[in-house]
Length: 99
Image 1 (spheres, one colour):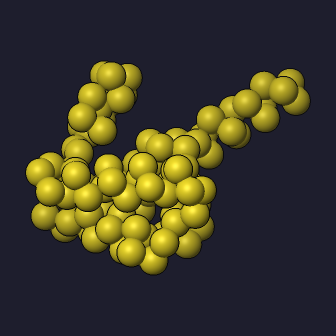
Image 2 (cartoon, rainbow, N blue to C red; image 1 turned 120 degrees about the vertical axis):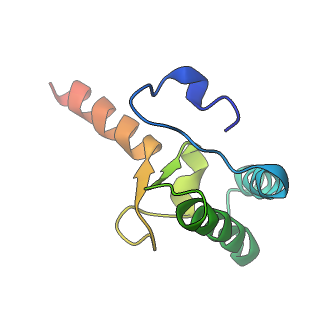
């Protein structure tokens, strides 16, 4: 999150959580990725920080940059606008494989 995708998205301003929010999201993500399951508490951490970014930092959408975040939120039923980077990659891989 701190690298803002290594400058790979020049067409948008990427905003990361800071301070305790960054620490909380990082801890929740590592635990979730290690176990392969998201807990209610972890899901609430991601949702709370996402809402802060949208409401307080003026973000337009939440970008799911970690592939494991697909078990937390779905573009179809997320309570806020989001971009699922893993989904975008999977769609492109499928498109190339079928071409």
